[in-house]
Length: 182
Image (cartoon, rainbow, N blue to C red):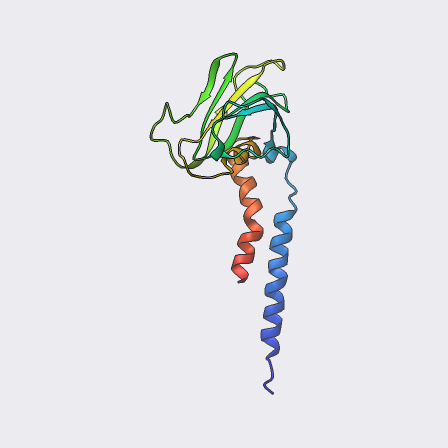
């Protein structure tokens, strides 16, 4: 039987301990709470494909294959004028209106060449807590990402560029560390 050198065992143990420390450090941040983006949720009701209005809740499953969706309601957090709102668009268009006034528009009708996935930054205008927003989600393709509307709703954050970048880099550290070990 071949004898394994003690140095090889020692280096292997040190490598695994270093990996565990990297994973542990990525999961425990000692930075201030404001250095992470704050998730924002949209509450209210929705109508898909011109259908009946229904309550929007955490279990609502909106498929981009079933036509455009109009959301009517509010964000669950009071947003101050000038707040940087970020959201993820995956091959969909979005129009945000208040009382018929368009606040944000990226629909396929306005930008026919729109295609792709990207994080969008939008500066929130002045608003009162009583304001009702309408968000129209539109799939310009007859195919694409079925979960694009759900991804939009799950990806609304308040935070600047650096905060978002740092947050998602920290979230990906365990995956990066694991890939280094394989």
